Length: 156
Image (cartoon, rainbow, N blue to C red; front, side):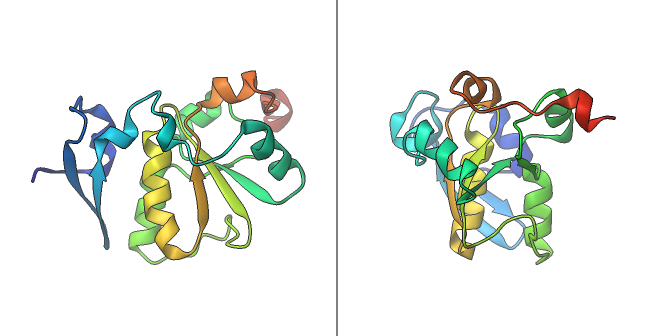
């Protein structure tokens, strides 16, 4: 089985059902790439997006963005929390607390293509987090009514 660094995974073009053994600090995860295929409705564990948005508005859920800081700075969703996937993996391997995340709330996670959100789900669910990966990216979520953050106001 080929082993690849966590952040290199998204760069590979692979066939469905091809498995890559991910070594992520103390965590080891076997990933079936067929679940990462864009458009695969089986991989979106979030439920209808209007329910996701309602859960966030009612304070029942947290929106986690696992994109890089550079991607986040170009635009992100209002009230989202940013923990880039590489930082998340590093913090978990160092047994650091994730104070930004509440185990008593649903955590909806998104990225650009869904791959990093699925990795976050695989890393956090065994630790007791109710994390649900969204298959929609930042722009698609805005198109579905999620409010973007006002970058001008944040930078003032």
